[in-house]
Image (tube, rainbow, N blue to C red; front, side):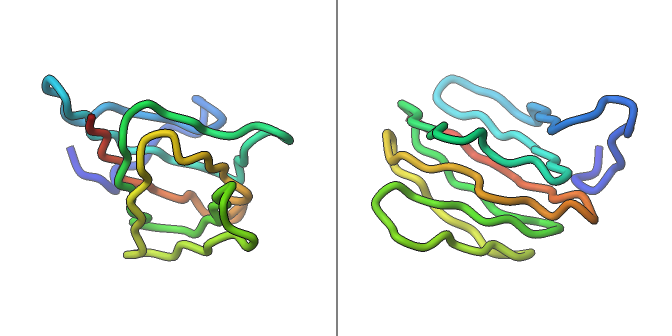
Length: 104
């Protein structure tokens, strides 16, 4: 498998694929096509997350920050457990490919 392998358009919506999993570690490829968090929704995960944008673009908003962060290819962020955040925008014109690493 290649991180840039296409994902069938027929699947529609955001797609998450587990690439590797072991106790205490999960690595996912996420492909977004203009998706964003629903109004009022905040991620509040019990595990930590390290995420990098490989292709496309996105904006993340953290509850404790005033302005969203724009992420372009190569940009990454570490998200501590229970740090509330949301996806404000992903590029609607091209797929945004994320690599997400989850850990305790």
